[in-house]
Length: 162
Image (tube, rainbow, N blue to C red):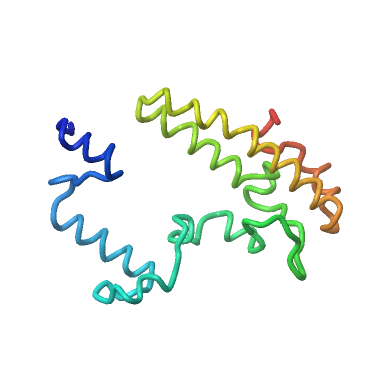
């Protein structure tokens, strides 16, 4: 699929572009129905659409991380009755969600052949690593058993490496 100069200009100006015939009508309808079911919102009532903000990850909440660790949070905190999780992917690396996000972030530009896309990701990685260290300091001080978990599961992001 290629874009015309007018479509590229529209994207540069408005931030979007219309993809015509990108999918069959049936596939598009299936995808649309799937998203509306996952959002649990009525597709015909725009007034209801503002009721819920969604992260992409929430659409697929039965991934291995959610099954193993019900305490995941965007905020570094210790929840009431939180326990150290050391099963599933958490038995291989201490931060499997960061590890998978890093693979996704690095793999996408490579898969698309957009090597310039690696530049901003490389700039983001020090911040991800800083947050990882900050999280580990906090959890080792505030979550009983986390220091022992760090000794048992030696690798943070990359198995057998780091």
